[in-house]
Structures are given as C-alpha cells and as structure tokens.
Amino acid sequence: MKIAVLTMAGALVLFGARAHAEGVNDAQIASIVVTANQVDIDAGKLAASRATNADVKAFGERMATDHAGVNKAATELAAKLNVTPEDNPTSQALKAGGEKNVANLQKLSGAAFDKAYIDHEVAYHEQVLEAVDKTLIPSAKNAELKALLVKVRPAFVTHRDQAKKIQASLSGK
Image (cartoon, rainbow, N blue to C red; front, side, top):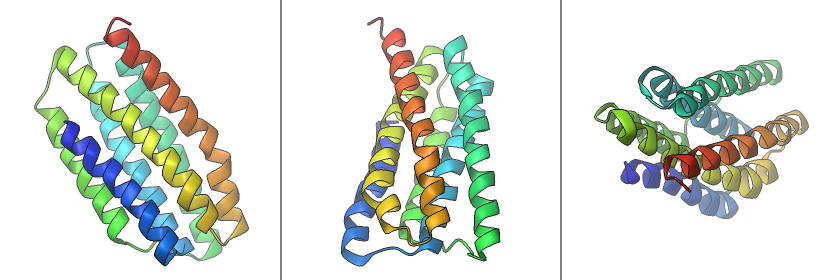
C-alpha cells in the first residue's frame, strides 16, 4: 500500500521538478488534472463500496463525487478552449500508480482497508496540492485553466484535512 502511495506521490514530485526544468503546456496540464482526479474517483468508488468505517465510506463517496465534478469542469473547459489533453509521463505514472493502489486496496478488508485508503488519501492530497501550487498553476498559460486550478484548490485542502481527521480517529488520536 505504501508503495502505491509513494509511486503516485513520487510521480507528482518528479513532475514538479521536471516541469520547472522543461515546462509543461496546457494540454499536458489538462491530462494531469483529469488523470489525477480519475485516480481519486476510482479509489473513492472502491472505498464507498468496501469501507467498514462510516466516515471512510462517506469520504470515499465524497471523493468520487467531488473529483468527478472537477473532471467534468476540466473536460468542458478543455473542449471550450479546443485543447486536447496530451498524455505525458506524469499522467501515465499517475494512472499506473492509481491502478496499483486500487489493486492493493482490493486485497484488503475491514479496518486494514479503511486505514490503507485514508493513509493514501492524506499522502495523495498533500502531493496533489504541492503539484498544483508549485507546477500546475505557475505553468498554466491559459487564464481560464489557471483560474480553474485556483478555484478547485481549496477543495483539495478540505479533502486533505478531512482525510487527516479521519486518519487520526482511526488511529485513536
């Protein structure tokens, strides 16, 4: 489980370092945004169906719903701007990491599933926020794309904070 978190987090951190050196274009940012959200949608749906803790289950449902909303807005904006999301090493790594995370979660049940899912969500949202702040927003050239990233950022903060709260309650702190 921790390997999957590190894989996706590592992809985001590596992306941040690479993007500063190489730069990313708006089409690549669109692909990263859609992929990162899809990763959380897939894990959220699994948590909504498999979690045993009511807070974890509700959080999974919220992740699936909220991230689907962000993807809808991003897809609509890309269509409006006539930008086709461009697959890139970061979006590919995120997708592979997301698939590995879901595969690892599917092997777990009960409290082990709940803990692994929430631990992943805390780490994942922290890394997404770092990528949004240090790479995606600064690299976005289109004002509307940049505005969308700025607009959705507070939701990612809320998600991270909620996940941390659930994480603390699961560990009895």
